[in-house]
Image (cartoon, rainbow, N blue to C red; front, top):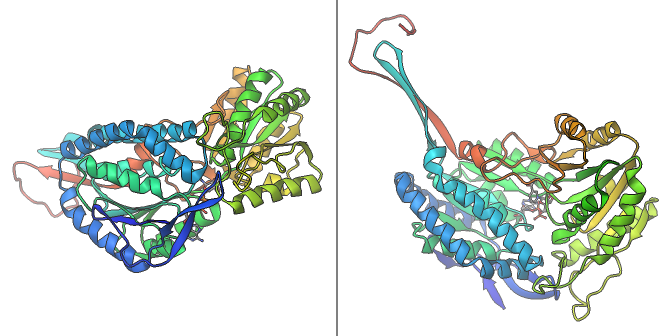
Length: 494
Ligand code: NAD
């Protein structure tokens, strides 16, 4: 049995950890490795190492830092296939989908390669006689990232390239369910020339997370995961005086208007609901069928859902792999049970699916639920599995009101041929990321990613310009040359 160790100070180490958690192959259900779970003293060690590395890394030139990032970017390209297979083996998603998350994560590295431009300060000449003002931003120190299982490469990449490019040092606590990708990335950073101690990986559970949240040596915490944990992390880490960005869960609605191309909309909804077995924070879990669109939409969706090929992530013929754990599988099955019991119509039932030769894998087929209502648990709770619920409404106004009443506000989409309806939708809907005929509107790396309401706790979205702001703090310098007489009055411009 392989033991997955921490990566601290440029090397694998078990530090002082003795507790472990199992890492499964979701396609077979087999336990394939165990991952060490850090104790608070292991977090201390990583923070001490990162603190020491900060002294020199924060003083390295922009040129030195960007050279490392360019080299790291090349290594991510070269090792894309290997990394994608590693992700698939622990997460379960199909290899091509894993490639997609690596590409989207790499785009943040590419943005960070341009940090010299993004970090430029301001300069005002002659604000007063012989006086100039300039501003610049400096790194915070040791910063930490706590990440979910569903994008083991992309989500950490929303954090570390920008944190490192801006001169911070980083401690990553990835999900204990698919930990290996983070160690792989650590090795690529080392090969790219990143000095030891700048990027560290500490594996663990709540014990490690709590040690990070309370640690006086950590200046900022980036968190992505479920809403209850995002709230907890935000509260505890801000109470400890840290800067926090905390992104939570989602229940993303896609509205389909009667003037939409139903075949096109259904194709996109199917991929966005069942891709990665629905385990994406931007997955579409609710389709909102407006007026006459409903019957036709459900008919096409049913056909498409039945066509989804479910199988192991390593099989190129699979569209959709298993979910991540047996517990996740049971949660999805229970959600469909409860929807059926509460009156929803189960149009496609994924509960009884088995994959030949993989009977012990964590597979569950796509489910399509019609006539879902807002009181049902399957509408109110984040299922995070391959379940698409259809809510029928009569008007666009009702669709917008439905979305705005939902506690989550991560992503949403509208399918329509009307520019006017799309414009109204994007202005009125209370959601952070909006797609017009685009089901999963994940912003490019040079914008920032973040939802509204319970999908983002606090006020800091992630990566892009907001990421640069989050990982740095500003100084404003007022300079006078040559020296002139001092006055006792409060200085004003002359
Ligand atoms: P999770 O909240 O269970 O875990 C996230 C991280 O928190 C992990 O590193 C985990 O070890 C840690 N953690 C879990 N329980 C904890 C506890 N009680 N105390 C302290 N730390 C704890 O999330 P997950 O199941 O790994 O990921 C799925 C969730 O993440 C979904 O809710 C999904 O919507 C969300 N997500 C959101 C975004 C976004 O951008 N908003 C992106 C990806 C995933």
